[in-house]
Length: 458
Image (cartoon, rainbow, N blue to C red; front, top):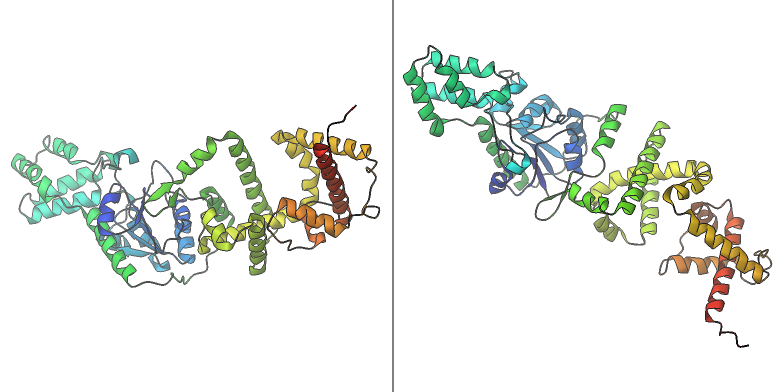
C-alpha cells in the first residue's frame, strides 16, 4: 500500500524517506489531492505537510473530502496540513502535532502563523523566512533558558507579527531590535543562542506525523469509511475537470514521475498531440453532455463499458490495466467517465455522422478516402460489378462479415450481432453494412488478381 506525502520547506523529500517509504510530491495546491488520489497504485494514505497558497491556489477542502469518500486516509500536520486537518478533522482527516492542536482548540487562528517564503523546487524549496509559530516557540524557549526576559520576548513577537510573513527572518528582527530601547546584551545573547537553541515546531510536527503514519501502516488498515455523503456540485465538477484525470505525477517503483515528462513526449510529436488534444476535448464535452441530462453511470453501464473497452483494445483486463496506467480502483472512475462518453456518442450519433466529413477536413485526412472511393468505383465498373447486391452475389453476408473481421481483427472472435456491429460502425442498418462489405470484398479480390496477373504479352 502506497503513501503520498506533500512536503517541501518544512521537511525535504530526502528527510521524509529517512523515516518512511513514501512518494514525495511538492507542496499541495489546488487539484493536487485529486491527482494524487489517481496515482497508480492508488495510495492508502495521503499526508499534507506543506501547501501552496500565495503563488498558486490552495488545496481545496472539497478535494480532501472527496479523497476521504474514495476510501483514502488523509493526514495533516505542521503547516497547510495542520490548517486543513483542524478544519476537516470532524469529517475524518487526521491531524497530528501541537500546531494542529492549537488550531483545533482556538489557541491559533491566523493562517499566517505557519506561512513562510521559500525557494523553487530546483532549490528544494529552501526556506527564506521564519514561521511565526517557530518564532513564538523560540523566544519562549529563550526566556525559559534565561537568555532573554519577557519584555524582550514581547518585543520580538510584536515586531515579527506586524511584518508580512515573507519578511519574517531573524536577521531583520535583530537589526530592528538594535535600533530599539532593548538591552543590547540580551540581543547579543539571543543571537548567539539561536543557532543551537532555535525551536522548529513545524519540523517537529512533521516528524511526528511520519512516525504516526508508520505505526498506522503497520496495522494494515482497511480503506477509510466516511461518515458523510459526498455531494457532487457544479463547482466540484469544474474543479475535478480542472485537476484532470491525469495526475501531476505518476507513481513508479522508485519515485513519482512528473506527468509533464510524459506529456512532453506527446507534445514533441505534433501530429499525435493534435489528435490527442481533439480527443480530450471530445471526451470532456461528452461527459458534460451526459451529466447535463442527469445521466449517471450505474453498475450495468460500467460493465458494458468495460467489455467494449477490452474488446476494442483486444486484450485481457490485467494487460489493459498495465498498458493504461490503471489499477483496479482507478479503473472504476475511468469506467464511470467512459460510460458517459459512450452514452453521449450513441445519443448524438446522427449529428456525428453529419460532421464526419468536417472532421476529416479538419485533420487533413479526407483526400485518401476520396481517392480510394473513386478507385473502388472505377474498378467495380470495369468488371461490371458496381451494381452488385448481396442477393446477386455468390458470397453470403455472413461469409463477407467473417472475412472482414478476420482482416481487421486477426485472432479475435466476433462477439456482437451484425446489427450491433452495423450500429458501432455508423451504418444506417445491416443492409447498408452488407453492401459496403460486398463492395470492399469485390474490390480487394480485383486488386489481388490484378497485382498477381502476368504481364500482358503482345
